[in-house]
Image 1: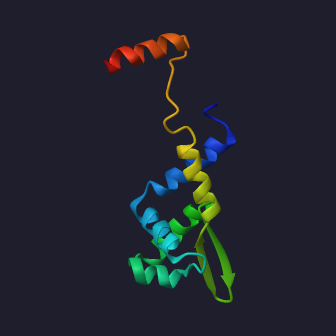
Image 2 (image 1 turned 45 degrees about the vertical axis):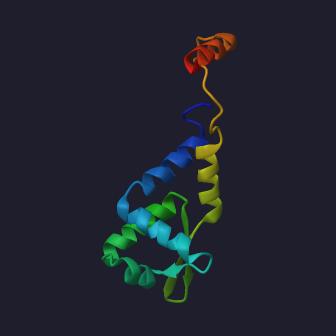
Length: 119
């Protein structure tokens, strides 16, 4: 897999967004809330962030594609994007336990070396 493909870039942006304590807390809260989501006020009640700080973090999560925001009258409903979350999880685990062979090593040598180290 090429390191700079569009999927990798999108997932790297999502992981970077989750790499901040406040954004991770907001995202996890929205995941717990489920499909109904939460208003900005409800998020603030649970986490106690200042409005401007919270707005910044919600914008970052939205730009990273991890949450959706829907205007409902005077309120904005924030929801975790569960499809994006599943795609990110799938991306992280798609090659789990597939093994690794160095590019300059023939497969039969790599297998022999693994057998030798297991003994």
